[in-house]
Length: 307
Image (cartoon, rainbow, N blue to C red; front, side):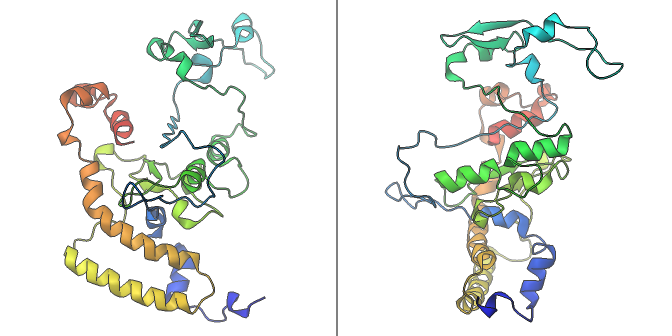
C-alpha cells in the first residue's frame, strides 16, 4: 500500500476540502459534465457502449413532495374503496378510499383516475410502475430511498446514474441539475454522486425556500473581476492544481475542481440566458401556467419550463 495515500501533513487546500467540502464546492462538483464539441464527437460516456443504442436522450424526474396521492392518480385500489370507512389496523383510524373514479384507457388498459383526463389520452405512451415501495414511513428516509435506492447507506442518486450512463450533450452546462432542492428530507444526498465520479453529482439551482424567480447557481457569479481577469485567474489556479496533481497518484476532487472551474466560467454566459424567460412566447408561458394571472402555478411552471 502506498504511503502517499496517508499524508502526515495536510495542505491548506486539503484541509479546506475535507473540513467543509471546500466551502462552496458543492455546486461546482456538479458542473463537471462535458459534451461533444461538435455533432461528430461522442460526448461524455464513462460506461462502455451499451448492447443496444439508448432511446433516451434526457430524463426529467418530477419529485412533487406534497403532490397528489398515488391512490388518486394511477394506483387503483378497488378493495380500498370497498372498505372505505371501515376500521384500519391502527387504533382510532379508518380506511379512506379514493375520492376519484378510475377508468381504463388505451390499448394497454391503464387505470387512470378522473383527476387527470388529459393525461389519460396518452395512456399508451406511459409506463407506470406500481410495484415500488419504501422501507420506512418516515418522509426523509423514504425520499432518500426513492432518489438513491437506500435510506441508510450513501448511494449515487438516480440522476447521477443517468449521467454516468448516458453522458452529456452540452459542454457549457451541467449534465445533471436539481431544481429547488430542499436542505432537509435527505438534502444533498438526493442528488449526490457518492462513489461515482464527482462530475456525476447534480448541480442545485435555487432552494425550496425561495421563489423560482430568484433561483441561481451558488458561487457562479464574480462581481470583483472582469471576464478577462477571471480567465487569467482560472488559468493560474489550474496550472498550480496540475502541478499538485502531478505529484499525486490520484486525486479525484482536485481533478474535478480543474474541470469545474472551466465549466463554471463557461456557464456565466450560457446559464443566465437559459433561465431568462422574457424571450418565451405568451402561448408558451400560458401553457406552463407562468404569469401574473397564474400565481398558484407560476413557481412550479417555471421549474418545468427550465427543465
